[in-house]
Amino acid sequence: MKITDVKIVPISCPYPSTHSWKLGLGDGVKRDEILVFVETDEGITGIGESYHGFAPEPVVTVLEKYYKPLLIGKDPAFIEDLWYEMFFSTLQLGNVAVLAMSGIDEALWDIRGKMFGKPVYQLLGGTEKNKVPLYIGCHCFGWKAPELLLEEALSYIEQGFKAIKLRGGMGVEKDLEAAKVVREGVGPDIDIMVDANSAYSMPEAIRLAKGYEEYNILWFESPFDFTLHNHHNDMGRLRQMSRTAIGSGGNLFTRFQFRNLIEQGGVDIVTPDAGKCGGFSEGIKIAAMASAFGVLVAPHSTAGLNMVANMHLTASLPDHVMCYLEWDAAPFNPPRDEIVSTPIRVEDGFAILPDAPGLGVELNWDAINRYPFIPGGEVVPRPRSRRWDYR
Image 1 (tube, rainbow, N blue to C red):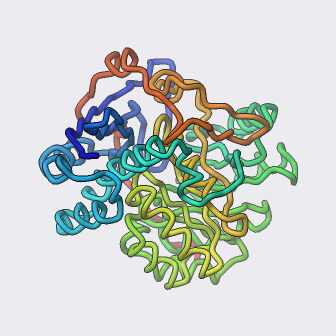
Image 2 (cartoon, one colour):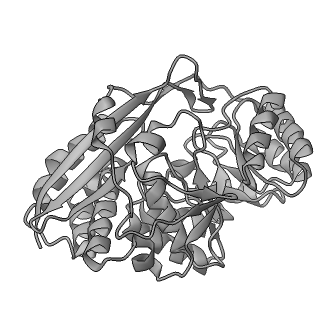
């Protein structure tokens, strides 16, 4: 089998005027996805998704100008060889190249699954599990008044979900008040996480981590600006200062960055994303490394095809490592509801794995064509401010 073509299709789903999503990074204006199609001379096409990194155009350029010519004519069965060819051919491009190759890797594993007639998660780990536990995250729980956050939380709990992740970054006191109101409203048996989206100074983060102890927060995620690249030691310091578990990794790229974070004692939970970290090939290596350090793995996810991909990654994890998978239950979700034409089953807070070969889903080209790409990022950033008086 030979690769005959690589097609890249970026899409954008603009928010309707009735919808808003605010978080520490800024204000959401649309949903972006970069779909990747790897075609072969035997009629098998692999599908995958490269995360956009809030800058889709550079990712598309790497896919088109570097990886497409490198892959055409190659045998898609040699996934590990192709991973290293892509990685070393664009090493100096940094994280944008890893984002791009992640979608290619997903598509190659989709081809492998279709070749052997097996779902990807069975090929990755041979697990007998056919479902994975979910927590509500992604484009849910933006900045809101505490009572509105509680109302949203209760709506998910009524559907059977047992875990939710709030969006922090509103300010230390507001974040603590949100956690207090939601915890008191949902009771002790629901897991609550908080993602600060890199909003805080060290004193602010310490105040929050200690304050969250009272509300039994399952993990406090990504508190610092540029956490993932420049604050590995600070994450380790924060972890030693409270009983609140620290999570991070949704924006780390390859096992090499995860190694630095874990070795420097920064986290209790890592959150790799198959569409960001280097694909399935890298995700399973990161999970193995986490296991060696006694760190849990709770994959990050985005909506649509990459959400399906991360279902497969999560299902491949051994029980002593696997935590929750992030799930986007937001009502405005064309990637989930329209682009992926195969219905994704969710029952009592678990995602049911498709049993068809490969990723196990099909895409709807009519829907894809209805959402042409809109230049720019999906989040409009806002200025940051810091307080240092929480010592």
